[in-house]
Length: 97
Image (cartoon, rainbow, N blue to C red; front, side, top):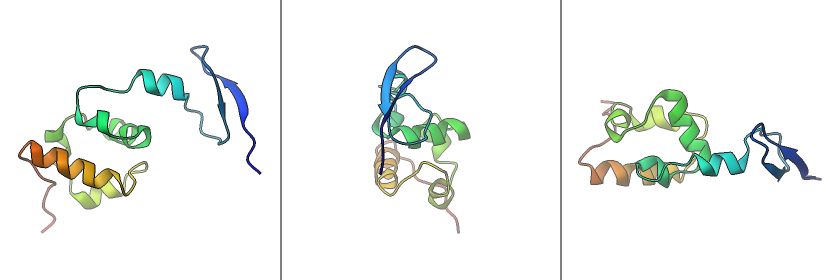
């Protein structure tokens, strides 16, 4: 049985969460980018790219699709979004051949 508990983040936001994940959804929404390819991704994928230091499509294109798929937080719906963003910028994932 999943029970939701009320929590308060270090910024004072109160929210309910049923998982052990410590991320405040209010803080996460406030820091969501609005003007890059990261704005089209879910929070777990954005955090994965932040951990890897990937902030631009040019940086993303230095990685293979296989490498990106191994990052914690990258789900199956993320890859098509990334491919579309790369294509629109005239880029692609690094070739593995």
